[in-house]
Amino acid sequence: MSKKFQDLDLSNAYLFAAAMQDEEACRLVLQTIIGKDIQKVKVHAEHTMFYSTDYKSVRLDIYAKDALEVSYDIEMQNEDKKNLAKRSRFYQAEMDITSLKPGEDYTNLKPSYIVFICTFDPFGKQMYRYVFEPYCKEADVCLNDETRRIFLNTKGKNKADVPEELIHFLQYVENSTDEVVEKNDDETVRYLHNRVQSLKRDRTLEVGYMYLQEFLDDQIEAAVEAAVEAAVEAAVEAAVEAAVEKTKIEGKIESIMEFLTDIEEVPEDIKDKIQKEHDIQILSKWMKLAAKVESIEDFIAQM
Image (tube, rainbow, N blue to C red; front, side):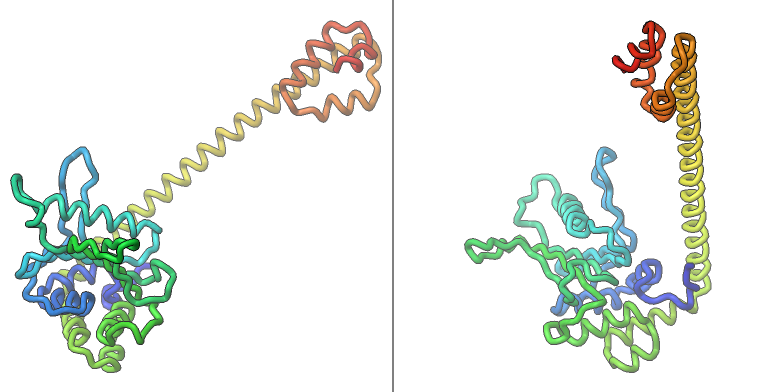
């Protein structure tokens, strides 16, 4: 059942996108995740990367650029669909392909970061933060193409390996309450909480959330109805096919018995064997045989 708007945590994609549209909130979050000072950012919520109608487009939850033209994509992820590695690869490619104008040199590509904030452990190593960048194992050399893919895990355990600020932020993502703010006393978390509390007082945003939930509920209901209808149709079709098959089997058994009883009385064991056979091809063969043999013995010998 869907949560009420007032009960949402920052892990909700709708509330997260609304909160990150505040550019200072987005800057503080990026600074906490990446671990370096970031200058003023420009934010686009639900930013669409569209290359061609022939190919899949991408809609990014939060797309931001800082004063140095560094690009950031931040995604909130609550469901493990086992596709984050290749999904992040695709997002990276889409961001890059729209970064250069015709004639520009590849050296003009700016740094870029893909960030997934997950409420589950995407790699099962119990780490709060997984950072990936191209690296040559044989030569111990980093490719230095200035791309990074970062996966955060709110369920991490390695507190000694990451900054406290990151842990505070991830705790707030899952539990956006006064208690967490008071417990951690963190600048980024306090700023985010003020932003979240302000958004929850926004009646327009709440109504938008209600409409979104209604739409999603309608989509789910329609999908369930379609699935049920398809299942019923498949069941009916299967039942009809089974009934037709059963009728064919019974018809062939009946014909075999008629042919044989016209010759002489059929032994009980042979009668039982014929009636228990459900392979339509075998029954067809026996029916042809029963129609031409002159004795039960011949039928038994050839069946």
